[in-house]
Image (tube, rainbow, N blue to C red; front, side):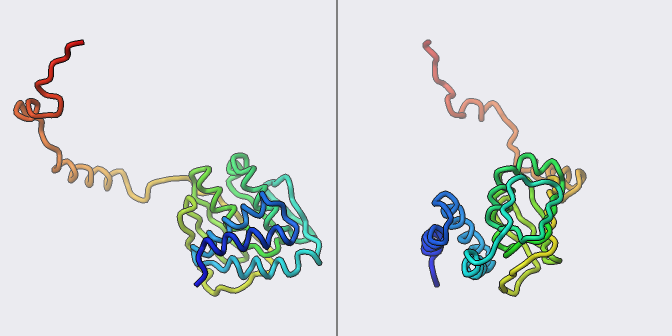
Length: 202
């Protein structure tokens, strides 16, 4: 099995070789490492994308809006970089959509890294394939085939507001249970506590 370090380094070099600058190549190294770590076929999809990257024309979106549509398939890498750069504005839209994106799995790690920046989860739907991105710590998905996805017709990115998974009553019940570990301060404890008996001469 290839190490994540080997994957990172090889992806960076290959990305530079097909025409991306070193800055983007560095980002792609991190991204494919991330996808592979979470069990998604990042390297397989990147390799397939690079085979056609020089022969085909892709739309390189710069300013991302609430709804983004193009007759020419979006480049997932440029779309991802600009999504990450514009994330603080995009999260105010609640939901962002893309129509016609090439190799959309390559877009996912940019979203995952975005969740860490804004401190919110992102729910992603790629033509019915669902992904929950959690603060760049994990990705839950119903996509388990490990296949190459060459094109997505519809992508929906939804920002999820943070909220507890439990009720206030459940919290209170558990908190009251935790109070059983509290130690009531006594005179004896005060005398034996750290710093007790020292004299301040200042």
